[in-house]
Amino acid sequence: MSGDMLAIGEWRRNTTQNYAGRVYLYKINPNGTAQLTTTIDSPNLVYSGYFGFSVDLSGDRLAIGARGERNANNITIGAAYLYKIKPSGDVILYDHLTYPNGRVMIY
Image (cartoon, rainbow, N blue to C red):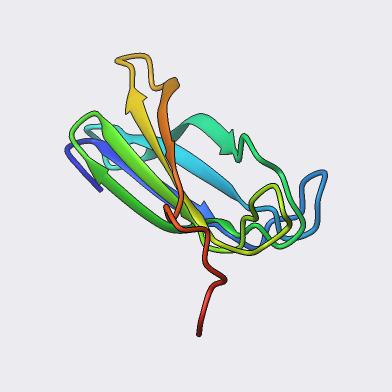
């Protein structure tokens, strides 16, 4: 939560792919109720992408982690997406970051 905005990740959400994930962005009203402003799906929908596994909100910036996303070689490397939140509550994708060497995720 940052200011009057709250981001919630539902990383196991089934969309067009199982466990692709989804993030919900809410505006907290002065009376304490929450109003959904936007729903964000991964720009790279993949099976077990886990988009929303981690979320961080600071001011008008939103970072979303997708620990299960894969590269072009189908290797799980994870990704982070950086968004700007507009005053209306809509978001604009700024950047998509992955591990630069494309290594397999190690647990």
